[in-house]
Image 1 (tube, protein in one colour):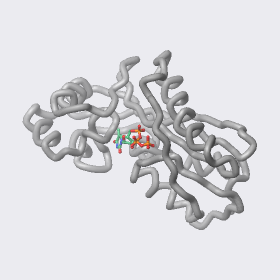
Image 2 (spheres, protein in one colour):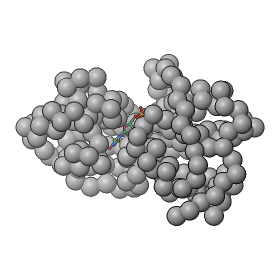
Image 3 (cartoon, protein in one colour):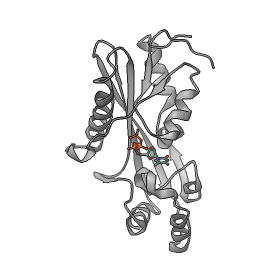
Length: 195
Ligand SMILES: Cc1cn([C@H]2C[C@H](O)[C@@H](COP(=O)(O)OP(=O)(O)OP(=O)(O)O)O2)c(=O)[nH]c1=O
């Protein structure tokens, strides 16, 4: 697909997955990131938390690039009201994956769009993911690949985490880090991109 834009687009993300997905729109964009303190955000509900973090990321970049449309995102894994962030070490990765094993959890990605005039739009997409009843042996082997550590919940559905997944309900790309179809729909509706 080839979309058009006359605006300056910035992706406020260091995630290689988000970069690859935004590239599929075939419009020019740049990447800038700013350090944010995600721990400063209070967790009221998983929905509110991801929205606030996505906004924090987008605002930190928009502050320095006021003539651009800035897109920020945050992906978080929620099991009920418990959030499972990126694991700090192998023990935490194992704890996350054992907690997710044989059950259904939700992956929430919030996308925040800040326009040149400061107008903010934020939305959340939710995908239900059910894990298989996998063995500890498989979990150890998966953790040894190093894949869990830069990913919310400690797995990547698009990488070897695929061996843990029984089924999903909702947008697959939302789990990978950006619900591209909804992002595209939103950018079209705000006339940030056109056909
Ligand atoms: C559950 C899951 C998460 N993830 C990734 C998506 C996100 O990149 C990451 C969650 O961390 P985020 O904090 O959302 O993003 P990030 O730190 O990678 O990048 P930035 O803050 O600069 O935008 O987990 C996968 O790649 N696959 C999966 O299956």
